[in-house]
Image 1: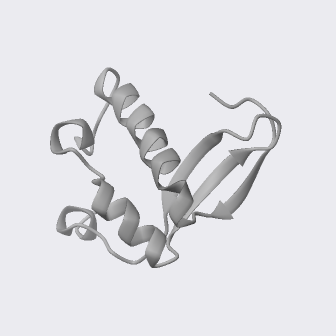
Image 2 (image 1 turned 90 degrees about the vertical axis):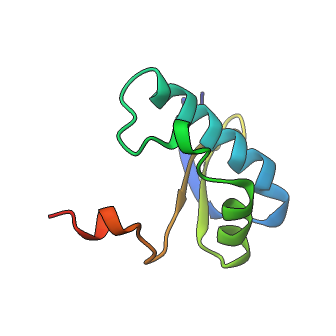
Length: 88
């Protein structure tokens, strides 16, 4: 896991595998701690979802400046599952 300063960058098609790996690490961690969205049981996000976010310019990576590793990943858009739309 990254420990240094990070920079944010829009993900490119070449980043798909790294983004999926980062999500998998997060999901694996959540599966043994507290996985409120239950991504580990739903195989989310899928490779197709990640690719769609990249193609739409909606996926961003936090890159560790020292090691070049992906330290975080986020999709920024206005799409929300129905359950989130009902949240206060």
